[in-house]
Length: 302
Image (cartoon, rainbow, N blue to C red; front, side):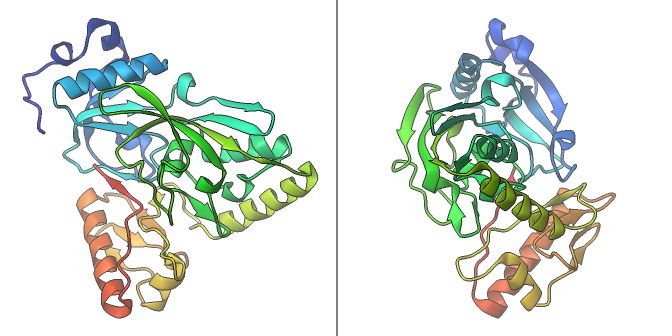
């Protein structure tokens, strides 16, 4: 719902949380696309209990809540987001701790950092995800996949906040992992525990480096303001699908698909969220018309 513009921060959040929150804070600087309006409230908690308190206060006032990891799959409209955005960039949600063959990762930790750390400890299961942008939490919610293996296959348990702001632990089975999705949409993921497999460090390192180089070569030369708006369907990669339908390089105002890597959307100077949305819709319509495949969005649209 839309919040009354006369309602102030102090009207919504308890005094002990107010120092964590800014009003009408820009979001574009935290997003890969670099466009979009401000958040009505932006919180940067440093403890898990603060996240719980923020969620409870927001729910009490029917205030919409969104979680911001590394902004690699978020598109914010120019009007901004009229609610509470919780940044997971603080230490409480970015830790990476290994015990035995298990990794406990905060939802805000970078996926690539998690892959590098586990490879260095001789643990296999995440190395194929190196170079994929975004946070551990976002990767688990979207069941990120590469090289024929998804992240859900090595998840043991997930700590989440429920609608009331209470924390609980759910199993991988309860997360309902399937092709590039889970039943975690709308949940606030706090941390994830992975069950990994001991392997030779040298072999893991070589595999990871090879995949990282290959992934980097497939990205546009200018990677400053890009996003991958679509999820690969079961049948073929989005790159192949868009190229085969003649949409590579398609442009809408100051937004375009890359010519050689058309799975990437590029926001050029003066790009707007509306141009992004129009281009995305044009691609989806043409792909559906030509192939019968309804492309699923990889983007969160705020």
